[in-house]
Image (cartoon, rainbow, N blue to C red):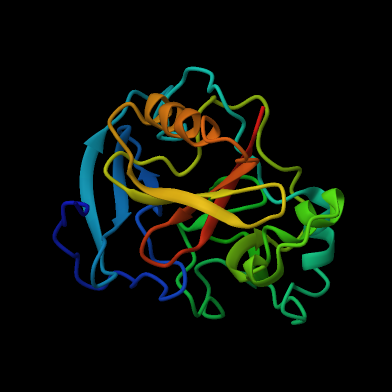
Length: 241
């Protein structure tokens, strides 16, 4: 099942071929408190517009649920981010740009940031880098993932951002109901030992909790990577408690 398409608005930017997925959404507020929810649509990558109403005290908060989660979603570690901001995991120098500017050739606004697990905001300095999510985890454990040590594109802030907001709302990031994910399971060697396709339900946190519980009920599973289904981009990881 795919997201329900919404009509594309004329003149709006197209989603990036690298980062267009089911997660990118952002909001703009007017003086009356109305919000315009811009939502990337699966399929041709167009962007549509929905008109919604939020109470002023909650309209600027993330869309995921408020209760504490059973498992901890982890961003890219700070030490890894420091390395990526110099040279990424494919050996490329970082090329920062302002989101939404003429230098933003990948239409980044609204895409997931893996350094702080929130969406890109127009005007902030970011970079699209190649990241190998297994590599440093494997080095810590003397694991040998071999061919499973793959790289993929992720957005990060070009400067240190402090990571996820600890004082913000609880919940899993990029968890829009109806979005499709792949939950990939890895063992202690860093080898893939299974996974599943996952459609985020209305109660996103409860759905993720159940999916992770199912994964860690499998003997030998040490961590789970959450990825976009269509493009395979890494979103975040969860480790065995």
